[in-house]
Amino acid sequence: MRKEFYITTPIYYVNDKPHVGHAYTNVATDAIARWRRAQGDDVFFLTGTDEHGTKNQRSAEKVGEETQGFVDKIADKFKDLKEVLDLSWDFFIRTSDKEIHWPGAQALWKKLEEVGDIYWKDYEGFYCVGCEAFVTEKDLVDDVCPDHKTKPELIKEKNLYFKLSKYSKQIEKAIETGELNVQPETRRNEILAFIRGGLEDVSFSRPKDKLKWGVPVPDHEDQVMYVWCDALSNYISAIGYGRDEKEFNKWWPADVHVIGKDILRFHAAIWPGMLLSAGLPLPKSIFVHGFITSEGEKMSKTIGNVIDPFEVVEEFGSDAFRYYLLREIPSDEDGDFSIDKFKERYNADLANGLGNFASRVTTLAEKAEGLAGLLVDEEIQNKITETAISAAKEAERFKLHEVTAKIWALIKFGDGYINKHKPWETDDAQVIFNLLALLDAIASFASPIVPKAAGIIQKSIKKEDGKIIGAQKVVNLFPRLDA
Ligand code: MSP
Image (cartoon, rainbow, N blue to C red):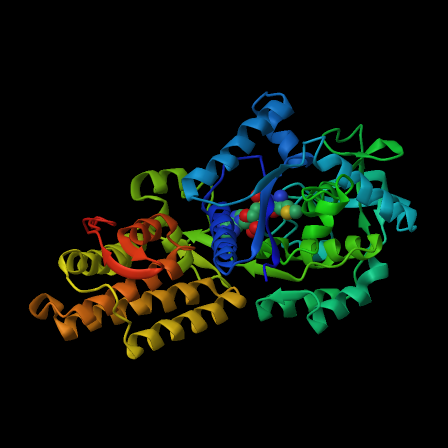
């Protein structure tokens, strides 16, 4: 039976153009979405941009542009990633979209207020614009935010607050029991420890005279929503909350929110609190990935080591970039992008790996006779089934680098099989048929990772009534790079 599967990326700030970290979140989510589609699920893959708040507004001011025009331009760059990274998202939400997003965000706000979870409070404290979050002394190291290396700003104003504390125990329990499945285990423990410390209420609005760039709070004209309250609600506004109940009920709750480790608290504490308050089901799981460094260092404009996904893809192609991100970066830890490592992986796993295997097998198959009607040998079929099972097991836990490794191990096996049986000497149709069956399986397993190459291979394999009967030669899928 077809099953709905709803998966999301975080929505990206539009203060600057996309870098490799954003590319990673996108590609990881895309690989999962493609894998679920291949399993037969009815998938809805959502991504988009987080366009309000101080950070975006100030970035526009800095270059002297009108805010909407500025965010439009950067949002377009994030949209361009679809083609560049070969992403398969179904919808791109923008929080400045008054038709799609605002009704949902405002309907959710009203629900929170209706149940009495919104109240006025005088706030005096610190705000980190980089994090778009209120911070306390214990979040700081030497008086600065450890992530952004900037001093938070002192804010003194009257805000509307959300009673998050009320839901502390319920959220803790949902994560403990796995009703809300936070992966990997290390992140689950981290968030549980944080919640057990007791969740505090959160300032959920900003006065319009201090920050005008935001979603207006219903019935409080002088306030706009706190950017995270606005942003988190994208996950339901995009699928129809407050607009199209039928569509909303079709997709909610989300199966997976994919996020980076820096935004865990917002997703595994504040967001569940909002949903509980509104009487909505919690997402089923949150998959938390690590951070990518560039040549061993944190990416920064000052160091000048920010990796531009557009440039990498221009030079090496989207498949190669996707492969590197999915194979070399451990999906549950931090990882590094290094150009030498990239080339090494490319030559070893793509040029000499998948590309070479596809070319060897299809070259043999193109001139082979008597393939039609053969059945794959049990040894080969078992190997294929084993890989399918073990890769699926890793995919269920979002261990994407392990999934990729399992699939590429099947290529190694195929290479070994060719070398052992030397079909170029024997022209043994059964051996060649086995190899084609292997290649066919590899292409289908690898298609969420390297969709373009997998598609070319799949097209080259000739079938009749779903049975393999031959192939056309595929050459130079991944031309070798000079060392
Ligand atoms: N706008 C918020 C998310 C709101 S979701 C309701 C935000 N945006 S962001 O643009 O700063 O980050 C978006 C995603 O990119 C996050 O998952 C973040 O973890 C990820 N990355 C940003 N830099 C990264 C690396 N250097 N490495 C890997 N991912 C990183 O947060």
